[in-house]
Image (cartoon, rainbow, N blue to C red; front, top):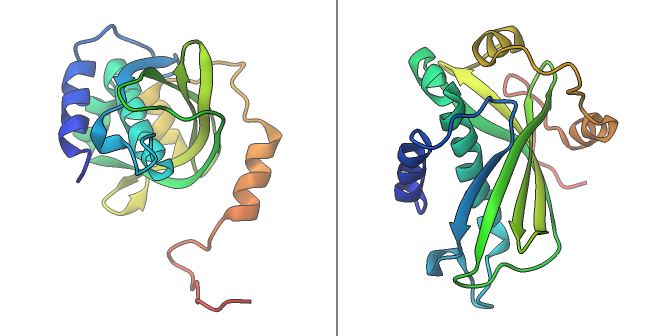
Length: 181
């Protein structure tokens, strides 16, 4: 809820910005607001993923994919995320959220996102997302039909497959009992 208004503003504004292909790189200009920071007066580590949602919404809206998804009743959900931090974004600092799709597999669409200020990467994240329709996963065939064919050179790095395998939880139809080892 803390970014609901900002999300709605981003979707509205992004629909009016320069059109992109879903396979392009989106660059969303931002500024660190008081609601983004923690007691150390820099962007809180947990806030980065929430802000990166805005970058993905910008790419989806500017490419027209957001509208196509909503017409089909599709909802995006994150299924895995990893992030690395290099520098802290400070209160009132200007930066951009750079977003691109780096590939797909049978279960997910993978995004790379960067927080960039003064021409430098401050943080970089990789997000695995799924699209759901009435609680069920949308197939990759349906995704490609809606998004268009990915560029031929788009290939997931091998480490992404290893990361997903080593961190995956069982699917929702399987038990995932809680017991510390």
